[in-house]
Image 1 (tube, rainbow, N blue to C red):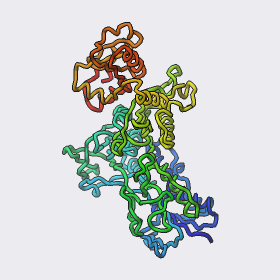
Image 2: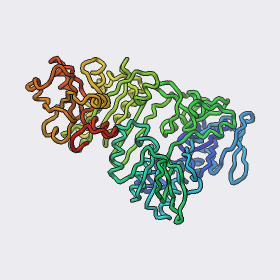
Image 3: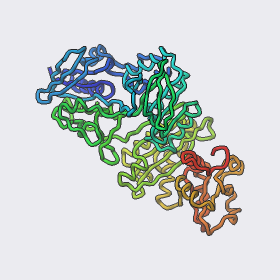
Image 4: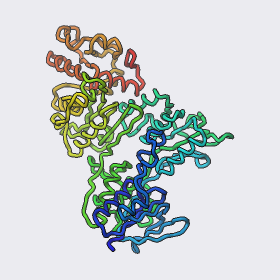
Length: 562
């Protein structure tokens, strides 16, 4: 027999590590210890099964102990919880059915993931609540809905999982309330980006309580749960789901003296080796390298977990494969609305010592003359010094994932906004445009860095507006567009007529220009600047201004979109 390899934990990282080790070494004796019943399943698909979008439960389960043995010759012990590790004797002590079992290893791979962070709620352990980390959790939620004929549900936490569960429950006809401690849902995204999903959720009837914390939970006489928030408001619910995030489950690692990093995850090198010889770690339990900053971070996402598992499995059998790091690329949807991100946010870029700039664009996912075009709101973050792309976020209905994936690839390869101008992307009327939204974001950012045009972000414009109500604001849309909604105190000169009516503008005052999305106002700014005006294009146009007007709760817009 070859190496004895023990993998603790299955799912994304553990199952991947074990199978990769087998592919690289047919002689190794490989064992997986999994504390739950299921060793390999699609945890990202669980909300969609709860909401009946995915009908087949079995489609979420890829392998069981029998199929792992048959296909990969890997021994799987389910309902087996590893309790401690002796790295000197190379032993893992585990419990199965109340009895201790000992496993000998030559190489050990820790993939036991993360655990839910429970908020400090008085009485939470006296009521029935659910989390969603395993098939057992998923089955428990489905059973509660069925047996209790649930009509009302409360979700604590409005992150990616919280939003997906909210959609699932809504699809079942359940009245959903969502509670989020921060001021906006999806706090990992910029609020002007997450607004798309917020509006889709509220339109669907989801009640969203932001800047709200549940501080007490209790049960009433008919079994419903009474929740009290930090404003001393109380309400009842039949189903309570906690989705307040996770943290690495490092208790087992600590029994082996493994070093825990500054972020709270297991510290590993690029080979997924821990501080203890012959012990590797992969997945949500580890800290990762941020590919932009080079610093350690946590990223409990399926993509990094799979890639890390692949590296750990290869190296455990003697190869030298590297895992370079993560950009935390992620996507989430509710109904037709979709939001995605990659890289750093603007605030993170500042914190990490960059001198960032941001541009906003709003362009159709495909040419507007082909039916069904949907607009993509794109936020691009880049360094003023050299134009290096630092991050991107986008929202829309169609084509969001494609654009963020292109930008993730660009960031991975340390590309600049100038490179985006020249990207050769696929084009056909149903799928895109000759000038893709990614290209356009590069044009806008590059124009700024080349000082071809002066511009302000919507947020900068609103700050100026609040402090100076006598601004010279120019709307260069058509009269029909202008009559529907507009920025207060603006004047309307259609861009095609600007040269003819330029005398209506005061050359002694700066002029702030907007259109729908930023292109026509860019043309106007170029014209006015060559006539001696100090002209500023408002990036993203009135659609971006409206977004910031809503999240800042200002009264800047007159008309139906305010």
